[in-house]
Image (cartoon, rainbow, N blue to C red; front, side, top):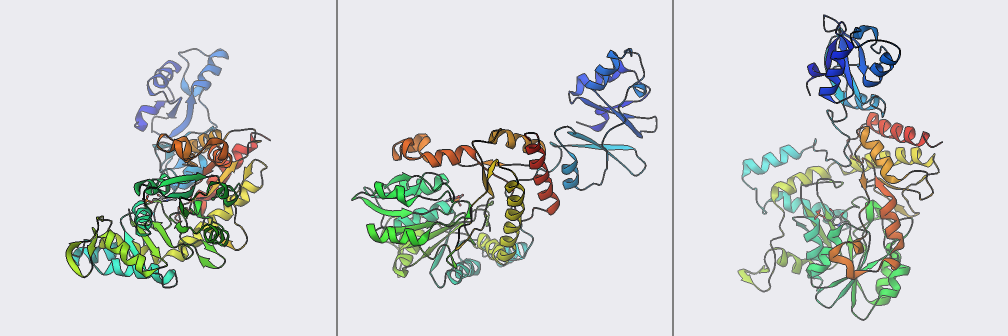
Length: 480
Ligand SMILES: Cc1ncc(COP(=O)(O)O)c(C=O)c1O
């Protein structure tokens, strides 16, 4: 809505203000003098009080307007505006240096603080331009090789294959390992659907396991009772960046002779016992979706312990074509290739990995300090001998809190802060009903109902971070 529609002049009468309020429906009008200098505001409530105090519909607006209002200079930074917007002050007039009304800000008009947006201010554009100028835009090219080498080096020499997203990375991993119809794969009930879908693609059956109450990762004590003669693999998912207990996973896998597929989609930069996640599994996978710690738009990576499995996966990634015999397809494979352009973005993103991870830790530390002051929240874990990369800062609203998670989410939404609920438990959704029973998956249900994520983008400014923390504090204060 244009600011003119929200403006009345001070010598107009109350009736015209009421008409204006009725048409615009925002509950507020800005009052200006003859020179368009902002002189006050008028709301439904101001008029109601004025009429009750004996004013007439014909009385001048200047006699009843509200002089106690917030206005800001028109060039104010978005994050400062966001800070000024509260549950009481939802619309703020913006003025020029002379005090003239120029525009207004409201939560719907300014940039909202998103949960996770990418930062592409490094060499991304230069490397993509290089692809275009050299015409290496498809899945062959130096950036694909370089991106794979970066992951090989990061994982202590393990072969790596770039693929088109994190979902096919998982499918390729399972397929290359020979997981197939009749097999069962243990996986946490609380994860993104891709983990479970990829198992179903192979024809195998996912077996949904409850999670630990602190790390929200697969609970091996619960997995024990689900092992059968058909169990072939376990897929630990490092949820929201907290590493699974990989020593325990290794011992479990050894005991039951299982393959391990690490889903590291949310955990690039997380460490367990001083080693990066991804080095523990028989095969490990990553996602580079736009909200991930590093992104290629869409993209993924598969990392292998065994080079023979890596070779088989490379063949499957390229329609099952034999490396030594072009256009000879030994097996039905897929086109799961990543393009050189996407890999170019990935190479540039990885150059900034340390900076990104430091930003995530700074964000998590700030939220932890704010939330830990209140008895209403369970902050995310960072267990001994682990480094949580805090991909997406996620916490629980305790059941004993005098408010529901949804109320806090709504409050934050009204102050321009996007939040995200935790995933639904997989077993509750139609395609997965047969893979787990609610009575076995109580922690997953609890975390799903009480968990929420806060903005965690690496380009979140301190002003934005303070705004989010202030909004949480303001909300909590209502219950003290
Ligand atoms: C745990 C987990 N696994 C797998 C994926 C799939 O990755 P993609 O979206 O790149 O297919 C995602 C994320 O999006 C994820 O969060």
